[in-house]
Amino acid sequence: MAPILLILLGATEILQADLLPDEKIALLPPVNFTIKVTGLAQVLLHWEPNPDQEQRNVNLEYQVKINAPKEDDYETRITESNCVTILHQGFSASVRTILQNDHSFLASSWVSAEVQAPPGSPGTSAVNLTCTTNTTADNYSHLRPYQVSLHCTWLVGTDAPEDTQYFLYYRYGSWTEECKEYSKDILERNIACWFPRTFIHSRGRDWLVVLVNGSSKHTAIKPFDQLFALHTIDQINPPLNVTAEIEGTRLSIQWEKPVSAFPSHCFDYEVKIHNTRNGYLQIEKMMTNAFISIIDDLSKYDIQVRAAVSSMCREAGLWSEWSQPIYVGNDEQKPLTKWFLFVLMATICLILLILSLICRICHLWTKLFPPIPAPKSNIKDFFVTPNYEVMWKVLMICHICPGLSPLGAVTGFLVFYIIGEGFYPEGQEYFYCFSHSVLWLIWLFVFFKRWGLAMLPRLVSTRSK
Image (cartoon, rainbow, N blue to C red; front, top):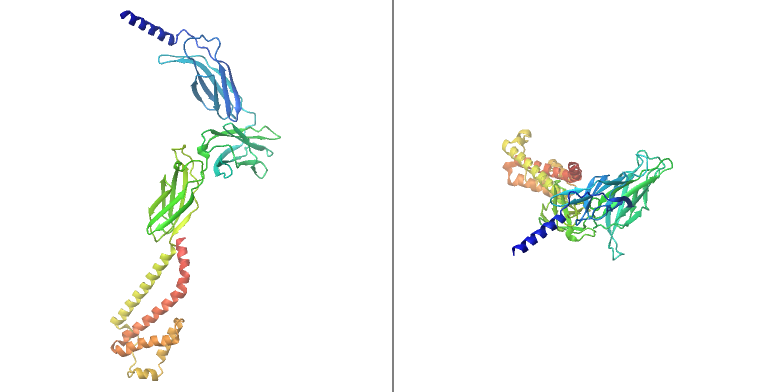
C-alpha cells in the first residue's frame, strides 16, 4: 500500500511541475498586430501568436492596453478584439503575451499599433453635438409596434469657413444611416438633423454613435464623432389619460403608462399637485399609476404627472415632460367674494348699531337738533296736514332705492313713523336716530350693490398679482 501512495504522490508533483511556468521560459510578444476601422467609432484589433514561442502544457493569454483616446486595459485568450471608441482624435493600442497563475506572473514585451487622426484644420469641426431619442407608436407594423426617432443639433466650428457644409451619420449595432432632413442657419449651413424613423431599439444597450463631418472649398473640415448611451438621451413621453376626481376632501388621480416599448412595471412616476389659492406645491414619487391625497375642498388645484424608466429595467435616465395640467376643485375667487360680502355687511351693521346706542345713551340727537315745541299730532293729522319732512324722507328712500316703488317707500316710512310716534312716543329721539341710521344703511347697501360688486373682481385680481 505504501509503494502505491508514493507513486501517486510522485505523479502529482510531476504534473504540478509541468503546469507551473518555468522561469527559464522566455515569453515572446505577438506578431502582425493590426488595427482596422470597421465602422463608425469602431475598430478591430488583431494579432497572431509568435511562431517562435516555445510550446508547453500551459495556456497563454494576452493583455490589451488602449493608449488613446482614453486609457483602458483588459485580458483575453483570443487573438482579436472589437473596440467601440471615438476616432476623431486617433487611436492607439498595445498588446503583449502573459502567463500567470497564483504563484507567478510572466509577460512579454509590448507591441503597438495606431490609427492616425483624420485630417482637418483645428477649430473647423462641429461643436456642442447633442442628440435625443423619442419613441412613438407605429400602428402599421406588428413586428415593431414602436418606432424611435432621433434629433441632433450642433454648432458651427469657430474657425470653419462660411461655405462649410456639415453632414451627419449615425450607427446603432450593424446599422449605419445618413441624415436626409437638415435644419440650416442663415448661411444655409446644416446645424440640425431629424430622423423620424431609425433602427435604434429603445430597450437596447448598444452605444449610439453619431459622426458629423464636413466639406469646404477653402480648407479640410475635421470630422467629429461622439458616443451616446441611450438611457442618457432617451426622452420619455408623458403619461397618458391623466384624470382626477374630488369626493369631499379626497383627491383621486389616475393615469396610463407613456407610449414606450417598456412594460408598465418599468416606470417611476412623479405627481405634482398645485393649490392655486395659496400656492402650495406638493410633489409625490411612486411606482404605481394611481395616487390618493387629502385636500382642502374649498381650493382649486392643477395636477400634472411625469414618468421615467425605472432602474429595475434600465439605468436611470431622463424624466419626461410634465403632462398637460388638469384643473379640479372650486374657483378660488368665489369663497373669497362671499366671505368679503358677509364680513363687510356685518361690519356696517355693527357700526350702525353702536352709533344708535350712543345716540340713545348720550341723547346726542336731542343735543344736536333740539325739538321745536309743537302740539302733538296724531295719525289723522298726519294724513290731513302736509308734512314736508315725511315727503322728503319718502323721496330720499325712492332716490336711494330705485328698485323700490313709491307706494313701498311710503308704506315703509309709515311703519317707522307709526312705531316711533304711536307706540313709543317717549323714545322719539331714539327713533329719529335709529331711522336715520337705517336710511344710511340702505344707502350704503345700494351703493355697494351698484359700485362695490363691480370693483371687487378688480381688487381681488390686483391682490392676487
